[in-house]
Image (cartoon, rainbow, N blue to C red):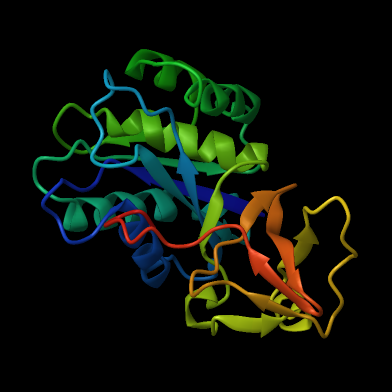
Length: 242
C-alpha cells in the first residue's frame, strides 16, 4: 500500500537547505519493510499575505508500505526527522496518511483549495480529521502545506518529482527507452509532432523533473530536431526550489 509523508515550512531565507532536500533525506530513515517510491514537490498559492520562505511549496514523500502496521513507526520517524533537521525560525509541519484513510477525499479538496485561496490551520485540521497532522515550531503554519501536499499528491495531476529512481544522477541527454525503463512516460505536447520513439534522444537541460500526471511520472517534451526532443523545464538556479 502507499503511504504519504509530507513536510512543509522547514527552512528560512538564510538556510542552505530547503524542504525538498529534507524530504529527500527522509528516504534514509524509513521504517523496516518500507521503500521509497518517489518525492513530489507541490506548489501552493503564492500571495503576499501568506508567509513563505521562497516559493510556498511542500514536499511529499510517497512510500511503498507493507500494511497499516507501519503507521505509528512512520509518524515517529517523520516527526523525529523533522525535529532534527528543521531550521530555527521556520514553522514546520508534517502530515502522514495511508492510502485507505477515510479522510483522503477531503484532503484532496483541501489541497486544491490551497492552490486557489488562503486557508487556515483550522481548515487543515478539519480536512485531515483522523490523519496525523502535527506542527513542530513557530506558528505551526506548516501543517497547512503539509496537509495540502498530501492532498495534491493523492489528486495525482499536479507537482513535479524531485526524486525518482536516481533521476538526479541521469545525464543531460538520454534516450526515450532509458527514461521508460525508469518508469517515466515521455509525452509530446506539440500538436503536430509524432510520438517520441524509443531510440529518440531527450535533452533535459541538466534538470530532469517529471510531472505527476495521472498518478505517475510523466515527462512532457517538445521536438527540437529529427530524433531529438527537449523538456519544457530548466533549472532557475533558485535556492531551495527542489
